[in-house]
Amino acid sequence: MSLRPWLGLAPIGLLAALALGGCDNKSAQSQAAPPPPPVTVAQPVKRTVTDWDEFTGRFEAIEEVQVRARVGGFVNSVEFKDGAIVHAGDLLYIIDPRPFEAVVLQAEGQLADARAKGELAKRDLERGLNLVQTSAVSEQVVDQRRQALQAARAAETQAEGTLKAAQLNVEFTHVLAPITGRISRHLVTPGNLVQGSEGGATLLTSIVSLDPIYIYFDVDEATYQRNSKLWFEGRRPSSRDTANPVQVTLTGETKPLHEGKMDFLDNRLDVSTATLRSRAIIPNKDLSVLPGQFGRVRIIGSSPYEALLIPDSAVATDQSRKIVFVVKDDNTVEARAVTLGPLDDGLRVVREGLKAEDHVIVDGLQRARVGAKVTPKMAQAPADSKPAAGDKPAAADKPASGAKP
Image (tube, rainbow, N blue to C red; front, side, top):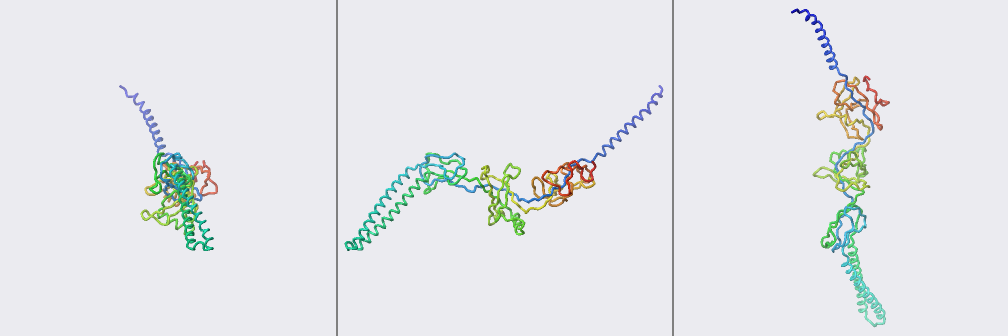
């Protein structure tokens, strides 16, 4: 068998192998050098902010009344709806008034008798005074009649008091709401016997006021000392003599929707918790907040100051440090340790670690690597904010300094 045909095919196979090898080399080179990943950067926003201290508080009613029976007797009727809003003077219960009305009649009769006796004693004294001038009666008789008139007048006064007490008992059979607020359920149903104040008054229901409403919270000792120092330096008004503003966030709310003012600070710290009991007063026009609810209380913790702010999503955690990624002029990424402050209108205050002209990565953190190059793009600035540095804000589609379009 001749080998000439096979020798003729050898160069063709070699050329094909070399061509395939060249394609693989080009593919490997293209995979080894990908373009810098795109990221979105923004300059810190500079604006005037105020620090707020946050505490957990509980709402309590400004006025709370336990409605009790002031006279004993059988309950005739309940005149309110459980859980309704009642106003001061509204009728709540009716206790059988007939026994007390009978006592009023007796007291009226006793008063009439005392007044009649007093009138008779007065006339006897007048006659005695006329007769003593002619020596028809002695001075002793006149003194006796004068004493009888005084006793009659005392009996009349006593009878008047008895009548007023009896009339009050009749009035107390109609139990009225002492304050305006939301009433609880009725604890006594018609037909039951209740005790008055003489024998341990029966609890009938309770009422709590709702508008405005108190919220109590405890301030820790460190915060109290810091605020006291700011007050001595004239950088923060004291809540003892100034109604400092307060913001409250209820459970389920994402931002403070209730505003009020400071109303009270206690005169000592609790020895067991080292906290100072504080109180704010909050308007509650829609009556949506009830006593016993919890809320997050924010109270001013500083005077207004200029600060740099960045989106909270731009902050990363490196063990115990908070860091942000900054794009330098050569488009390489640098990690900066920062000291953070509170959130202000959705942005995080940066106390230390950033400059006004820095470009912070706000989107694409997962694609950034320290020391590696990136392709930065300036983020669109919010309508109500301005960059911290520069005469003009950067355009939304313009690359950061040093970036290639």
